[in-house]
Structure formats: structure tokens, C-alpha cells
Length: 105
Image (cartoon, rainbow, N blue to C red; front, side):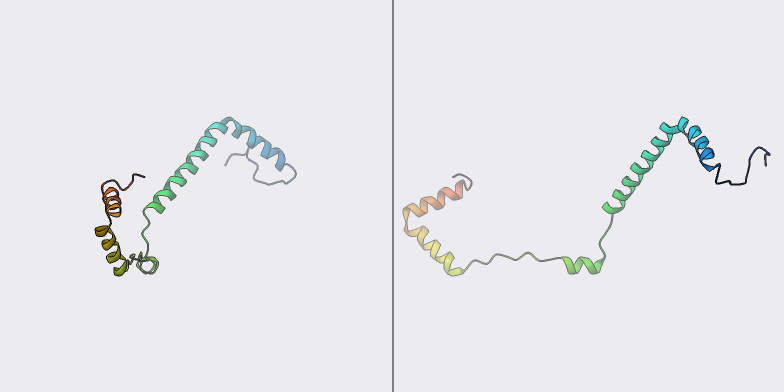
């Protein structure tokens, strides 16, 4: 070891020693900032990659899947609408118009 380095830590001279270290590190402030920014950016990209490739466990995927209910239309209503469509000319025209262009008002 070199004789210039003092290995004794003196709390009275600690602020002076820290000021020297900060003064020397200030020359590399832009480089240190760039490395810190690159590390944060890399960490965020890594976490996004981990979460985007995550697969649910089999027990949670079966319990959380909900079946969408199938709408049920009463058969009596269907037959009544069919009768109205066949018997009335204006209703028949309304059904034909809606069938050809359902989004027209």
C-alpha cells in the first residue's frame, strides 16, 4: 500500500474528505448521470419484458374465467314478431329496411 493513503477514519475531517471526493466526481457528473439514466431505463425495459411474458398459473386461470351469459329470447316473442312482420305492410317494410341497412336512422 502507498504511504500517502490514511486509513484512519477521523469524523472531524470527514466533511473535508467528502468535499474532495465530490469535487473529483463532479468532473464525471454527466457520465454518472448518463449511466444512472441508462440503468433506470434498462430496469424498466426488463420489468416490462418480464410482465409481458408472464403466464398465469393454471389454478388462477380456471377460477377467474367467467363465462359470458348467452342472451335468451322467449320463443313466444319471436313468433309474435314473425306474425306482425307477415301481417302488417308497414312493419314488413320496417323489417326489410332495417335488414338491408341496419345503421341508417
